[in-house]
Every structure is written in structure tokens, then in C-alpha cells.
Image 1 (spheres, rainbow, N blue to C red):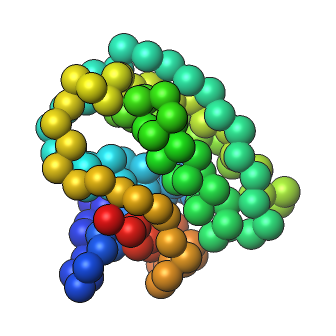
Image 2 (image 1 turned 120 degrees about the vertical axis):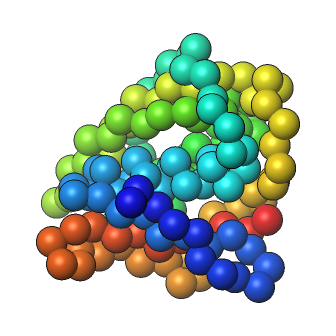
Length: 135
């Protein structure tokens, strides 16, 4: 299982899983975009981003916030991510594939990423990320 949505009273909450930390972050991005649009997104465009943080939670927050910024500022809607994480220095490089947002009918508008209930941890040999996004 890549991710699952959890019950939340007003916002969208999910957990993303991965064998590696990078895979868990990639699946976090997939869950966030899946909450906005459930169909297939084309991979016509490519972007690269670099993000840093002070710990794993802030790195995840900053990564998802950067993806949301690309949606809002450049109408770039992500279909796939390929991530490399430097766990010691809390740095991330990502190659993003996606398409123009205008080609899709978005069902939920995400306003912001939150630190509410957020965690990034290793559980039973696998990585788990939990995120709540404000809608």
C-alpha cells in the first residue's frame, strides 16, 4: 500500500508508506495530489526542485509546500516524483513530472500543508509519513 486516507473532521489526512524514506516522501506527494484529482495525470512537463529542512518533518512540510506553490504559481500539477534525500543534512532533490493544472477538474482545493498531527518515522522496517492538509 502506497498511502491511505484517514478520517478527519474538516481537512484531508493521510499516511504514506515506503521501503525507503524517499519512497515514503514520493507517496506523500502522490496522496496529496490524489486527494485533489483521482484520475490519471499526464507526464508532459518536467521540473527539478531542491528543498531543505531542520528535521524530517520540516523537510516533508517544505517539500509538499513547494509542490503546492508550483500548483498555485505555475499551474503545474504533479503526476510523478523521483526523490533523493540526504537524511543527515535534511536536504532533498526531486525530479517532478506533471502537466498543466488547467487540463484537470480539481475536486478539492488544498490551501496549505500543516504540522498538525504530522510525523515521519520508521515503523517495522518501513517508513511512514502522516500529513494533514488544510482544505
